[in-house]
Image 1 (tube, rainbow, N blue to C red):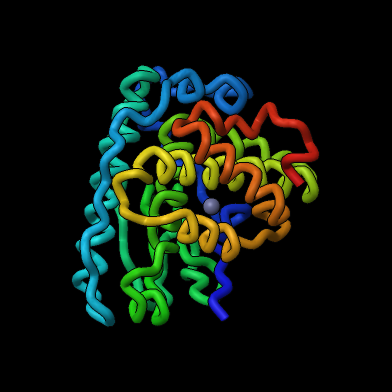
Image 2 (image 1 turned 120 degrees about the vertical axis):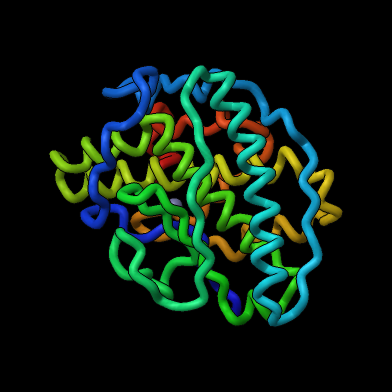
Length: 253
Ligand SMILES: [Zn+2]
């Protein structure tokens, strides 16, 4: 059975607060979450992103496939950051096939399919055996888009502020903030996927399969809420659709 949580593990407690090397315009305080300049940008401008061919059990073709998606993400998000007046640079990404030290603890290979580590600003994307065996699979696309969503949150001041608030909060409140972070990253991922969908040559079933495989937990939200934010991002085509920090509580459980 191909059940997969496509989200991030271990941010709470595991993450070290990033340095303060950002340029001045990056927002801080509660406004970084609720009124971030990213929400004022339009839809993703670039609507083309071909998926390159992969070959079964050929890791190099998977790396090339993911690198190309990364180029698309850099281009699309770079433009949003420009519109938002925020500084931007490309993330560091590592593709892994086994458990490794990430800078945010050992990669929990049995749990998560991807992880963003704020301490070294690195996205970790795990490629599993079943994904390697099936070059038509669509889940890696979502993993890299989701982890990129965390990178965007980090660059925009969202992640830093969320982590600062978590430090002083009760366990329940820490989880609640984490769900806002995760649901937003999932919304960002779907906003990107939706924006380039017509260029991918896939049909609706691929996206429905992706939704079926995305299941919730206490850190990422209930399945129905993850699906809500996925659809919302998909329909919105840009980060403006994804302000989980002003959403009603019922959409954040
Ligand atoms: Zn995540």
